[in-house]
Image 1 (cartoon, rainbow, N blue to C red):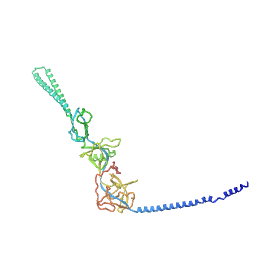
Image 2 (spheres, one colour):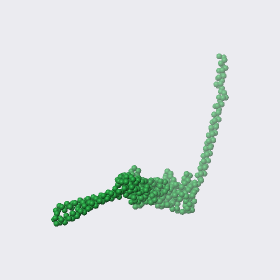
Image 3 (tube, one colour):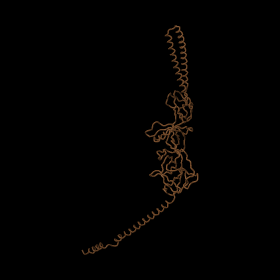
Image 4 (cartoon, rainbow, N blue to C red):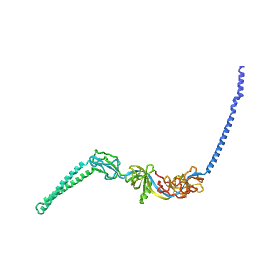
Length: 442
């Protein structure tokens, strides 16, 4: 018992008097707190400095003039077009078949050859039909002789009857014999005509002018009468038509022009619309609107003198509905839009930009007719990412109303051209409706 007392005393002393190792970690958290506060202060000061520098830089940038390119609005003409995909369709396509049976002895046409009406195409062995014709001619000659003899007898019976030498019944019987012989001759004449037609059918000629397709038969083949097997297919190329289907909403504008007696011009372009293939006129309209698509089929006709249009070819069709005269035109890139509608930046004489609302009319993708601008007013065509209402501008080389650079005439400080540049009429565009924005349907 006396030996355990010192150990107990030492243990109690340790509980009531902590050592240095136990107090050191509790005093270090003040150091970390100070470090954290210093870091926060540094970050806050850095952000304030950066924001001040950015605001200063923004103010400097806002005060600098915006570099823009300008174009002068002009007065001119612009066309209202209907754009659609069309398919070239021949006026006539003829599939030539045989109307008589026989062996093909000659094929006169070459594949892809242009033929005229009446040109020989195929020859069928004519000898059986020539023999049939000769036979019918012989039968006709025989029956004509019999008829002549019956008429001579009838004349004799008439004289005898006048002298009361024969009975009236005998004369009447001879009259009927003459009528019977006349019927026989008539039948022979019909057979002769049929034999001539069959002989003519052995010489197959082109029923229309056009291009023949690939050769379908060769000499030596046996063809059947009235068979559906084609001997040759001929397609007329000059003139040729194109069928396209505008929307029913565009029909009133087209009908309005047709009722005035106007011939509407139609142009056909290639797939990329880079090259005009042919020019023609609107021929006719279909008599019913397709309810499944809401479109109406129209047919245009083209002379196609150079054979640029090919049957079943798809082309881009532009129907010129009307030409709007003396409208204000600006480059389409100058037009901007916001929640209120379309607007442009008008560059004034003091080198500042002024936002102005406009009403859009017909457009063609590069030129647009607008209301709300006067001819010769200058508008910006680029630099819109920095341009604001009232901003100072610096004008680059001006452009004309089609968006290209202009080098004609002395330039005003605003980029306005002194010379009144004329506009090409018939600009390719879409249909505008109700004075709102019109767009190409391509």
